[in-house]
Image (tube, rainbow, N blue to C red):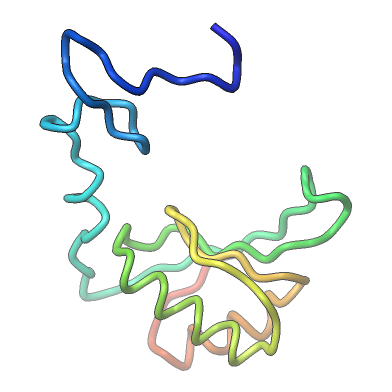
Length: 115
């Protein structure tokens, strides 16, 4: 098979989930996308540059896999830092080196921050 192809339907299992590739009736993507929020949140920060054309990106990861929470946090961080960004499956990505501003904001919200 080519690298850019993927199975869409299998006669053995029926339709496949586009996210995880498992059969739709056994897919758990929807369940994990709404993981409950723990009482004490720990966010980890890192700076990435590889694979982005030399641009730096601040990544906040180690957060619960809750789509609504990540989307809301991404919007708050983008507004606070005055930059672009996105919520991904495993965290939040912000354009530029904003570790200081992000750390201050998350600590003020009561999160524990590492990195």
